[in-house]
Amino acid sequence: MEFGKNSFPGKGIPKLTDDQKEIANLKKRLKDIELENEILKKAVSIFSTSDKKNIGL
Image (cartoon, rainbow, N blue to C red; front, side, top):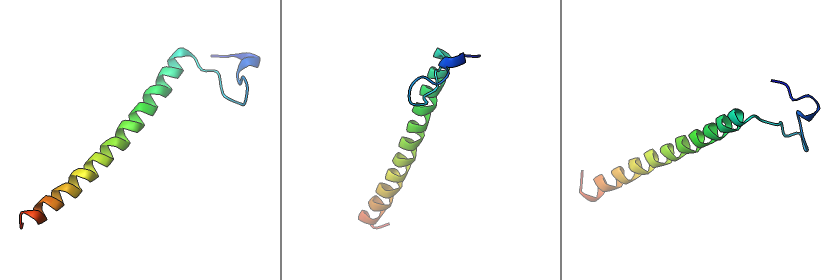
């Protein structure tokens, strides 16, 4: 794939094909979901520990 002189239009941002844009978008969404998953795991761990203390385990 070659874009010639239009490879980096304005401020050095590369021109992407529709497929490349979709891949970049999916990678960003995956990263966001993985981060959200880690946060939820930590929250479950915190609340589970808190619940055990409250019921005397």
